Picture 1 (cartoon, rainbow, N blue to C red):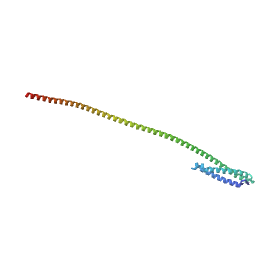
Picture 2 (picture 1 turned 135 degrees about the vertical axis):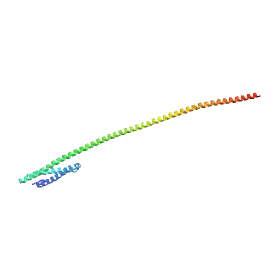
Picture 3 (picture 1 turned 30 degrees about the horizontal axis):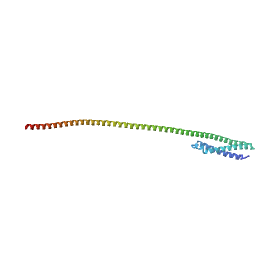
Picture 4 (picture 1 turned 180 degrees about the vertical axis):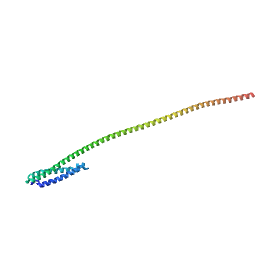
Length: 228
């Protein structure tokens, strides 16, 4: 019996080849799914392979519809029963492959969704980490500013203490100089008194000397007058 796409036997052979190719493609998809590179394969080669397997299964189901029409036209009942079982077997295998492919696609969609959610969480985590880092940097800068201010205050305090110590030293030196000046003034005052006393003594001595000389002259003059 012949259909639009060939004889029943030819269509059956084509369907079997497509079944083998679809089964092999599905096995490759499942191996990729559980391999260490599954995540990368989802968006690459296996999406094309999944589309190719789905296309083959759809073609097989179309061939099954054609074969179902053809086997019913077989004259011999035993041949009809034989072809019926063969077509049903092909249809069942195609349906099984379709269900397996649908499950794979669901798992694939779930993985893609989870990967997207992980990427979103990672993006948010990175954003939160950046925010935390900014806060940490701000706190670090604030602490550094506080330390700098404390250091400046310590420096100012040290400078103030040094100034006070210098003023205290200058004050002590001024007191010492004042005492020395007073001592010098006192010494000068005593020296002036002594000088004035010496001057008075000198004047008295001079008067005594002049008085003695005068008395001596008078005495001599009287003595000479007395001898004559």
